[in-house]
Length: 63
Ligand code: SF4
Image 1 (cartoon, rainbow, N blue to C red):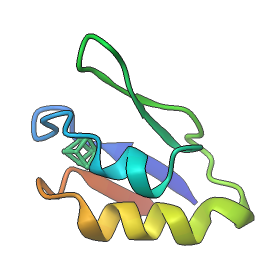
Image 2 (cartoon, rainbow, N blue to C red):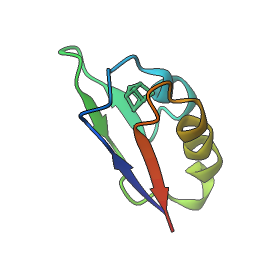
Image 3 (cartoon, helix red, strand yellow):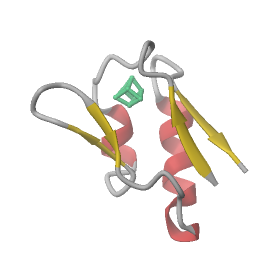
């Protein structure tokens, strides 16, 4: 599973980081870093939750 973020939609509110902190990190300058672009099996449930809950629908997970 891979993570794709639409940075034009992302508003760096850190909802994804709350749900999947090993995958997403919002930096102090309010930019989003994807820590694991290739999501390992143990993080996939958290990543799906982040995708579902992103208020901007900026996260897309691909197989
Ligand atoms: S939850 Fe969505 S809008 Fe918020 S920081 Fe993550 S990707 Fe960006």
